[in-house]
Length: 339
Image (cartoon, rainbow, N blue to C red; front, side):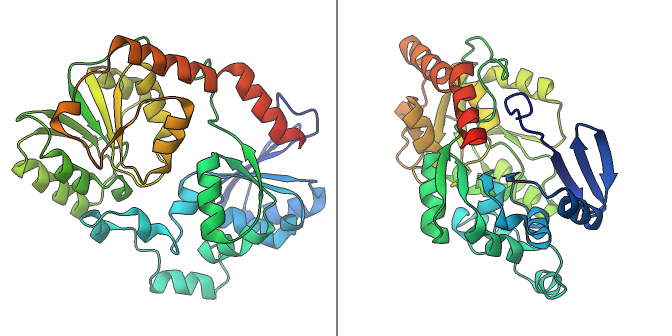
C-alpha cells in the first residue's frame, strides 16, 4: 500500500489493548488502545482500510468517529466466520461439539462493560462502504448481513513473485488434511469421510499445533481406530520446515466450510498437488473460477485419489500465474487505493 499510494499513509497494528503499534513517516510508536483513539482523533484520517475486522478495530472505528469516513473492509476469514451469529454454520456435526464458545457469560459481561466485543463488529457493518475480497464471499456476506457495500475485487494479497512458488513436485501419495488446529477444519468429519475411500496405511498429515487438550484427544482417538497412517503434527514449525514436509504431499484435503488456509494451498496447487474441498466452501468456487480443477469432497470416490495428469498440472500453474500475476495484482491494488 505504501509503495502504490502517493498519499500520506499510517498503519496501525493492534495486538492487545495495551500493545498497539502505530507507524507513519516519522517511524514507529508503541501505545495503548486508548492513546490510539486519542491520536486518531487528532490526525483525523480521510479514509480507513481494515484488514481483519477484529472487535478492537471495530471499537476504534466507533470511538474515533472513523466509521463516518470511507471505510474499506479487506476481508479476512476469521472476521466474519468467527462471529457468534454465524460461526455455528461452519462446523460439521462431529466437530460441532468442539466449536469455539463465544456466546457465554464472559462475552455478555464484556459487552455490558462496553469493552471491545463482537457487538461492535456487528454494529460497524452498516457503516462500511467497500468490501475488498473475493466476489463469492461478497455475495455471501451481503446476504447474511443485509448491508450494501461496493465490491472491489482482491483475489489474494501476494502475487506470484512474492509467493516464491515452488517447482512441480507431486509428492509420494501423502494426504495433507487441514491447515491448523482450528476445529473449523472439521478434521473429525473429514476423516470419517476419507475412511471409506483411502487405502489401508494411507499416510495422512494433520497440523494441530496449539489444539486444546480435548480436541487433541478426539483426534488421537480417531487416529487409533483409523485404517490410515495418521500423523498428528503437534508442534509449531517454521514455514520453511513445514513446506519441506509438504514435498511428500500429493493430495490436499480441506474440511472447512469457509475460506481458510489460502496461503497454504496456493503453493501446493502450484507444485501440482490435487485438492479436495467440500462443495459448500466458497474457496472451492473461488479456485474453480480461477481455472483450477478442484475435486468435490461431497462425492469423492476411491478412483479419484490419483495424481493429476501432466497437462492438468500445467493448466493449474498457468491459471495461478494469470490470476496472481504482478500486473493483475498491481491493477487490483490501484483500484482499491484510488477508488
